[in-house]
Image 1: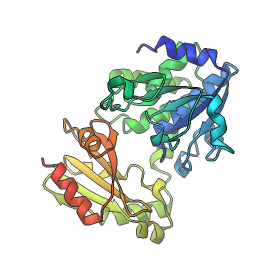
Image 2: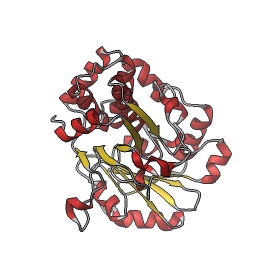
Image 3: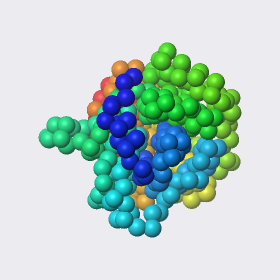
Image 4: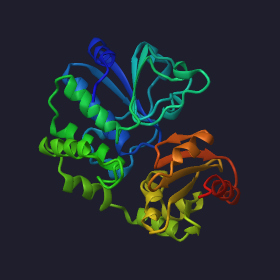
Length: 321
């Protein structure tokens, strides 16, 4: 995979970077950001890692995860810093809307909307957006190698975790021979597949498991669509939060005849965060874009402002299979 020359020059010429990723972070966002920060520091660069939301507890094994800052003393004072935006391609998605930066580079694998302005409508002075890449961690892997930096054990754990999350631990349709080769190279660099898999899938708290049990009890099946949800009341009853719902959208796809899994998560303003997961050729990203969201062919999302019943009805109309 070819790394843009202008991105390499950008990283080599600047001395300090503001690295940010999307709100509600998951493994690809966190692991990619941490690995790139570590790599740049090998080159004696200074980095500030920013994430608006807390790092979920089950990602606390990631080396360096405690370096993320949720509050910058004065976000307006960062206007003299270059921005690296990872695993998303808008400032809004990172919770940085309205802020100005010295310059910016976007590294992402989500499809970007061009809008009416064509490419000129996309954010970023430098844009490396590769929708066919399985994870942003793949792009960061190639970037680190292109800069001639040896991948340390800590970088390898972060990158392997990033790729594992977005490939369903190498089970999803985006798992290619290239992805497996990269995984093997990261394992050789010190990432333990057994350790990472255990931390991702076998260290749930009792509270999170209780929330998952309640979520499964909300299951409705309409034709080939499975719908589940989590409400604010369910969080209160189980002592959990939004960060505890990661991977919940994917579980109903286990059911043989399900083509699309819909997961609704109630937000504090009574709107609903909708996560769509599909099998095969059903492209849920197109539906998410129509609703103001985005994502990938088989994994996408958006926010809908309505009551739960109306939200379900809207989704079933959009998902006519």
